[in-house]
Every structure is written in C-alpha cells, then in structure tokens.
Length: 383
Ligand SMILES: Cc1cc2nc3c(=O)[nH]c(=O)nc-3n(C[C@H](O)[C@H](O)[C@H](O)COP(=O)(O)OP(=O)(O)OC[C@H]3O[C@@H](n4cnc5c(N)ncnc54)[C@H](O)[C@@H]3O)c2cc1C
Image (cartoon, rainbow, N blue to C red; front, side, top):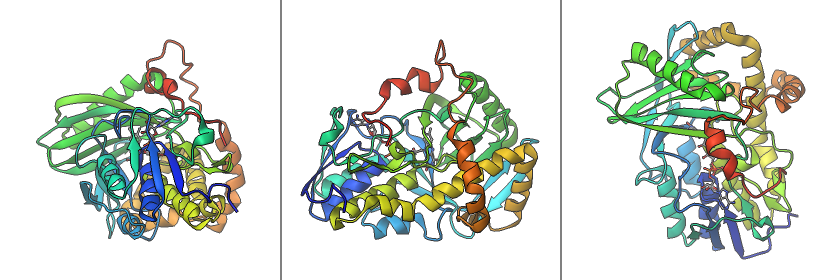
C-alpha cells in the first residue's frame, strides 16, 4: 500500500507534460489538484522548437494511448512516417514506417504547443495551476515532476522560418553531435535544427556550426530569422522513482530513452501511472516497474550496443533500418528480449558512470548546462 493514496487533495510539483498529464487524470477522477510551477508559464525551458513524440517504442499508437487515458490531443501535431538519416560517412538512408514513426509537435508557451494544450486541459478538468511558485520543501508535495536534475544530454540549435519543403532529417556521427545526433525538422514554413550531444558540451558552438553546414549541403537548409535555442536533458536508471512515499515522474525520475533522449512519452505515461496509483490506492513503484522499466532497460542496452558498434555499427544499423518497416524494427528493438536481458547487467554497470560529460569541467564554460541548468537544480535528492 502506498503512502500517497488517502488524500483528496493532491499537489503536483512541476507543470511539464508529466505533471500536467498527472493533474488531468487526477482532476478528471474528482481529486482536488494543485499544480505548483516555478516559472511564470508552462514550457519556459523550451523555445517553440519542434520535438518528436515517438511512436515506435510500443505497438500502441501514442496518441491513441493518450486519449485512452483521458488526455485530449488538441495540440498541433503532424504525423511523420518517413525521413532521411545520414551515417557518419554522409551516406543517405531513407527510412519509412507503415504507421507514423513520430508526431511532430511544438514545445513552449505558444498557442498550439503541447505544453499550452495540456495546461488548458488541466484547468478545464478543474486543476488549479499556480505559477511563480517554486517548491523547496518536498514534504508537502504529492507528485514530483520537476524535470531534469542535471545534464546528460545537451541540445543547441536554431528555430527559424523557411521556404523549405516539410521533412525530417537526422545525421549520426561524432563530427556533428558526439554520442548523439544532429536533426533538422521542417513543417509548414517553420524549422528547428540542432546538434544533440551526449558529450563534448564545451564545444557546442563548433558542433552546431558543423550541423548547419552539413544540412545546408545535404538537405538544402535555408533559415530566415534564426533564433538560437538550447536545452538539456537527464537520463538515469531510477532506483525507485518513489521518494518519501511520493511518486517521482518524467525526467525528474530519469525516465528518458537512453539511446535517443526521447522523454515526452515517458513523462506522460509516468504521469498517468502516478495518477492512477493515487486514485486506486495501488502501488506506483510496481506500476512503473511493470510498464516503463522494460522499455527503459532496453534503451540502455541499445545505447550500450550503439556505443560498442561505433561508427561502422551505425552504418550497419541504418542499412537494416532502410530496408524494412522502420517502425516495426524499432518497436522490436525496444522489447526487453532474452538477449537484451542477458546484456542488461553489463549495460547497467557501464551506464552508471559515463553521463557526466568529461569535456565540461563547469569552469569558464558556456555550454547550456553551465549557463542555465545548474542554477535550476530541483528540490529533491535523488531517489
Ligand atoms: C532541446 C530538447 C529537445 C528535445 N526533444 C525531444 C524530442 O524530440 N522527443 C522527446 O520525446 N523528448 C525530447 N526532449 C525531452 C523532453 O522535452 C522531456 O523529456 C520532457 O519535457 C520531460 O517532461 P517533464 O514533465 O518530466 O519535465 P519538464 O518538461 O522539464 O517540466 C518540469 C517542470 O517543472 C518545473 N519545476 C522545476 N523545479 C521546480 C520546483 N522546484 N518547483 C516548481 N516547479 C518546478 C519546471 O519549471 C518545468 O516547468 C527534448 C529536450 C530538449 C531539452
């Protein structure tokens, strides 16, 4: 029996997708919900940049899953069932899925963004959302949804206007984005280009310049009124994701795909699980272990194999991806199969150490984490 189930009043700390999804489900079940948000609006750590709500880690479509949980999907989204991926040798691989590989959406405070739509729905369901309310004392809170604790990933780029046709391009290799990938997303005359690094943060400007030069040559990148943006993310394998008897959800729990750094779906799913645990009086710890841990663990093994394979491994993986239904192949890659279970202890041991970026000493460094992130450390100790 969990210690967070017997109150009618529930506080959710943090108005990101995780906290708001949780608040919506709780409010719809008749709970009196207060969401306490540090900043003056939702989505303040984003910049109206495009992100992908991935649709490959499960057999079920992510939007269907959200609607089944009672979350309406009335934000602007665009299904992408194809895109182009480049290997480190600049070879081009078209990838395609039978169903959307991801839904492109916008993050930030603007109308039509995921964040704004979830806020409006939470309020309509009866939740009170309080801005400019930084929580320092976690004892009083019900659910902790405060986003990343530190930077395991840094992304820097530009959002811009453009006449380019719609499309999605991804490029792998250490020259553009060490350990991660460079991406270019264009939809309806708007675009986002970024280098998403898992290490090498100190040289973020160099990687962004290389990324933009690359996409200019290979995708005809054209930017009008480019606006710089940056962000950071956190991946950890949570030991418990329950703290002081309270559920910890989303990136604050470290829930994010270790291979690609996709966290929105995990944030929303964990928010829904936490809300249901509170409503039913069931055990959130058991729920996330059952529903989220297999995919998270498979992601860690995927990252382990990816790093082991190096750049030749990337090309091999892309050749396979381009020949088949990419969605089906990826869905299989996120199942915790027997070989993956066997590799997991090794992958976990290796995984514990490496995400503190050795290039960033936090001294005289102007990477996104050093200039913004470390001043925004959230309230809680690691669970
Ligand atoms: C540049 C970038 C690109 C990304 N691209 C993708 C992508 O394409 N696909 C994908 O799935 N994921 C992507 N991610 C990751 C994804 O955005 C996050 O995983 C997701 O937003 C996590 O949601 P959350 O609710 O856990 O946390 P957040 O969205 O971080 O929300 C946490 C909220 O808590 C508030 N808060 C923090 N501390 C306190 C406090 N003490 N008191 C009160 N409030 C507090 C914050 O102000 C914030 O509003 C990207 C991340 C970045 C930075």
